[in-house]
Image (cartoon, rainbow, N blue to C red; front, side, top):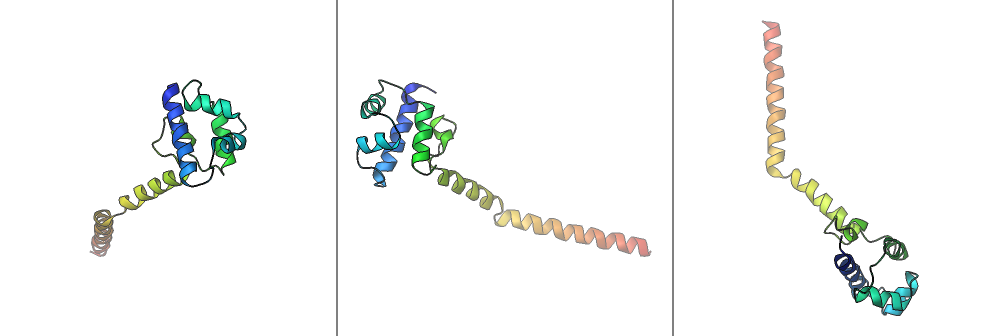
Length: 123
């Protein structure tokens, strides 16, 4: 993934933390993720690339809420909870009404076939 995209995703994570009032200043954030305020500033201005180590430190510092695949460009979901929600929605939509009706139909057909086999045996 390119430097700018990786840094942009890092900035999205920082914005999330700020919007949730988890951190209030860059200085506070830098301290929590164990980098200097100057290093944070360089990353924000695309003068340096955020390292994987810094991303892991940030994730750990904030309770592993971030989806690391997001920073690698492998996912559209910033937060782990969003990944879980998306997977649950995918499962629930796969068991929607039409699918349930098909399952009921197959169950009914299997019962009918078993009944026909039983009748044939008796004859």
